Length: 204
Image (tube, rainbow, N blue to C red; front, side, top):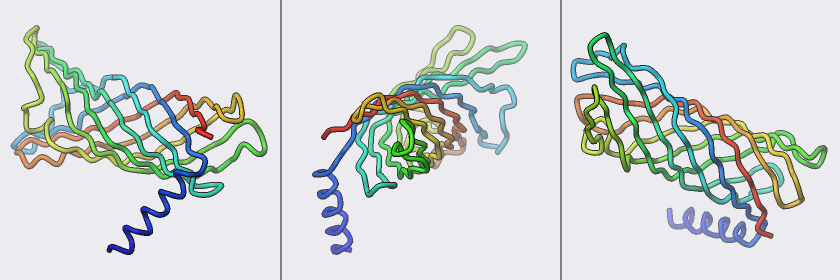
């Protein structure tokens, strides 16, 4: 175990001395709540909604094709709902730590474009949230189904366009499912489709 940790640290140290990149992504989440109550029943009145997404971090190259991205995320997972009597909505903000493996399918050596496949995992936790029911507002940070650690596998695709040798803009799509690890009777997961726009800068 100690040898594996030492090798990992050496690899990262070598990559810190090579061409790292910093990135900033902003985008939109389109979220569907996967909710079941204490009796295992779903709520058919919950509708999907959209919210903002932000991501900032570093990319560490691991060769010509592979790379590792590590960064912080802020995601809004929102929903609306109601029936003939009640109208309600949920607005939440989750702060996360994300790691992604990146593989370049098409590199910029042929054209000023690059196509990149991504897969990784995000660990996140609610930092603020409100539920509104018929004009009344309730805090969500203390509710069992919203609080606690969430784990989110992420799969995505990025297309980059190089404005200069060390600056590129990007457009991407990510699909994820955010699994709540709370042990309460009510269960809540988030199914999420995400569109992102970003800028990447080399630190050479």
